[in-house]
Amino acid sequence: MEKKLRFNSATIHGGQAPDPAFGAVMPPIYQTSTYAQSTPGGHKGFEYSRTHNPTRSALEKSLASIENGKHGLAFASGLAAMDAIMKLLQPGDEVISTNDLYGGSYRLFTKIFEGFGLKFHFVGMNEVAQVEAAINKNTKLIWVETPTNPMMNVVDISSIAALAKQHQLLLAVDNTFASPYIQQPLNLGADIVMHSATKYLAGHSDVILGAIIVNSDDLHQRLAFIQNASGAVPGPMDSFLTLRGIKTLHVRLQRHCENAKVVAQYLANHSKIEKVYWPGFEHHPNHEVAKKQMNDFGGMLSFIPKGADFKAAIKIVEALQLFTLAESLGGVESLAGHPASMTHASIPKAIREESGVVDALIRLSVGIEDAQDLIDDLAQAIG
Ligand code: P1T
Image (tube, rainbow, N blue to C red; front, side, top):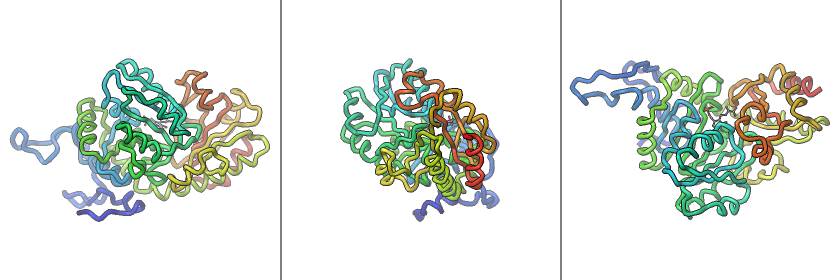
């Protein structure tokens, strides 16, 4: 029985051992599509790289280890991982999802899976009662994103998990914004954890990759079947880069959280800023839940400049020099985004504004540079 590692060791060693061939300390990049067989079916556990690849297998073990789960599965992107989870369902099944979530997730649900007969209910999840009210006999899955992208709402995973158990529903949590350094949804009662590993897990803005982690053998078997049958798998090079990223997850996240706190406080005290969304503030509506389920408050925040409209927000993000104006988040470098025209443009304006994604909203992924340089950049851009 392998000794259970603490988180800061699991990121480096979890599910990994020197490669049996030559003792390579890092799992080699097995850049191969297929494997020699001595007789049909006579192979060493690997027959075709859509099904299994040793570099991907090493990553999948690492993913399971850092989320304290039994099984990990890697996909070609975060959305490919979500696509696989939705394929657990059948036409007529219904899903209850957070109403504030990544625009691409909303697009996958409404533009792809509604066409295959699934029905989605988007609800605010501040109160468990709001979720319970949306449950009916066809409900099969609750989809939680927390903290939410980009409004930084925090959903109480344990309470939703209790509700899901009571009604025999699956609970899936998109843990992209927090990362397992900050919260481990399986420990809080979730059935499925999903990541855009493109973000904090890989951590260097050089990979697109998705992850699923589960405890149930049955769920693992069904998702592994979908992974192979649908085929949205990552290649060995991207699996390797993600493995390498995970090794420094805990050190990077510590600095992301420290810097985000400094930036959040700077913006909150700025006379030209109207509102800052960051769960570390005591006045954040979900601060108590955040303190309960998160080890820290993460590297993401959003804000609204005073009196700003679409144009004024664009002017600020264009003026930033150290923050790069770009989609994505979770890399070592700081990024700024304008959700209404970028990451959340696929959500109809009326619907996105209902959850607070107004034209003036700016989102920051606070990197691990010197915090003072980040403040200086914001100061000159805000003016
Ligand atoms: O980009 P991809 O690896 O497919 O992951 C999709 C995804 C899923 N869930 C969350 C919470 C996400 O933030 C994302 C991707 N998000 C961005 C690209 C972004 O800039 O918000």
